[in-house]
Length: 468
Image (cartoon, rainbow, N blue to C red; front, side):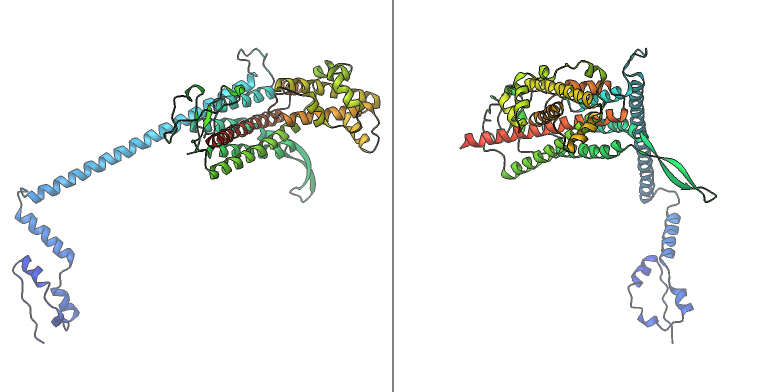
């Protein structure tokens, strides 16, 4: 077959010829076809070669634009590399500052614990248990002391609470108890060894407290974009609501004069928000009960100080008073709640005074029962549980304990009694000190959250009634 080949005179003709139908060349052999085909790389090389020969002096504008774009790209890449290097250096410096801050915080905590809060270093400080208990209490006051409303914790306070509590609670990782166990040695012999396990009270209570802690922080963190807000006590008459109408002044308990006033829209909050608030209040209330139960259990396990026992009156009747004593001794079916109703307690200060007196009389009667039976109180309780309940001191002590329990249930925000404060100050057990202080501050936080939610619900209820 005859071959048709028309060599092109210029590159432009080659481009035009590429659009010609090539079906007539299908009968060519592979070698012959390859001779007349030009790859894209050949075309590119040819174009570059043509440019170089046509503009040898380098004065072509296209050449200038290419050179300038390359220089600009190199400058931009250089700047990006410098910025990335600067950002990495700044991030590394910030991380190092955070690490240095954490190290300084740990040094401060460690030093105060060793010195027993005696900065003079003269050895007159408190014991380690009291020092770590005070550290947890002071940390709670620093983080939550100014938090008087339902709102998320600021990030810096949240970070401070988690870091420093983690540092203080890490002591519990090294409080262990040893128990015998069996192991196989290299000679396949069974040998008895002592293994260390976390102390039982810490193993049971600390994870529960950490869970309660996380739940309380989650409740506070959930109060974002709420339908209620807060105003200072003196700004109620002049401020306007978010909807534009005047805010209604709601009377409040004067005992909480230092707290900001909760405010709601003129028609109250929505039904959905109200139910959500009630749910959160119930959750916080359950957390409060759990923390209080743990705290009461830890305090009950602490040893009663000798100084407290020595200061007890010889007669329990003199401590509790004639009116309460007559009801406790003459009534066959004792009701602590009925007795508390008859006392007409008007303030928490009066309730705390009665709690101190009842607790002192309870230990007085317990001591008499132990002397009469020459046994410890736990053994006497077991003996009385078997049916012998005729001992007057045992009956009075049990009724005083029941009355004290009901009194604390009726006044959950009651301050520490004299005995509780004495136990905390005289305690030498570091594990008990951590559990007691941790549960106490969580109990206080949960109680505050419940009270703040109830304030909002009270304002909402009053506003809706006024709107009707």
